[in-house]
Amino acid sequence: MIVSPRDRASVPLLHRPVTVHAWDDVVFAHWRHDPEALAPLLPRGVRPDVVDGSAWAGLSSYVFRETAVPPFPPSRRLGSMTEVTIEVLTVDDRGRHGVVYRTVDTDNVPAIVAAHALLGVPYTFSRTGGRRRGDTLEYRSVRHTDRRRGGSRLLGPLRSLRPLRSLRSLRSLRSLRDGGSTRPRPAATVRVVAGEVDDSPLAAELTTRAGIHAKLLAQTVFWQREHPQLVLRQARLERLEGDLPAAVGLPGLFDRAPDSLLVLDGTTVRYAWGDVVR
Image (cartoon, rainbow, N blue to C red; front, side, top):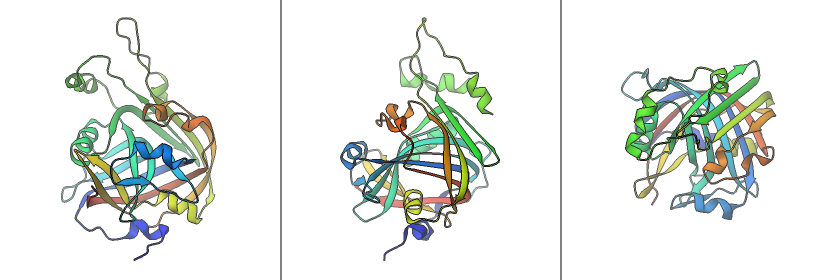
């Protein structure tokens, strides 16, 4: 059965949902890219999805709200968080159009632990913040880099950090020092102004993905995504900077304006197990 891009994520879930949450104030920025350059960044069994003659890499940023893990009620710890992602659009041999996250940066430690252990999605601890004023949306992420050797020590500094409440808090962050030296702290900032509705096929192709392709242990797995048709809006870029793409294998991604820039005011998303790709 051929499913149009607009209806791709309306296909009923094959299994019970593992998470249900709201996406609010979403920014989608996508760049045309060389498929051969993106292929080595993907897990086995998936390849770059060629849309309108190009492969695509992107940034998305949004706020998760009202997160629930059925059959349990919404969790306070997982209930609201800001995420900034770098991603590659993908397709597998069964024709499922998905996305591979090179990183999902957030300051929600329980979500990071759960996503790594259960989903295979590469969440990374970062000071994230966002705000919306009218049609202007702005997001910023600054990673907290562990200065001490040994991965077992990571949770120590994480426990001591308070959740970020605003972009003003981000600007006040100062470099942590260890013996007088610092390490790079990959960051990303995006600010856009939303405009008119964009119902073009390309906009739907780039934003409505059937699920997530992820590497879980030694396997590539597929997590199905379901949500209503998206009402997308064109956007004008006001600010884009940072070296987060270089930290995840996509240097130079922010060197030019996105080839597609869209805003989604909100939707409700449900995720469920798909199957093993390879």
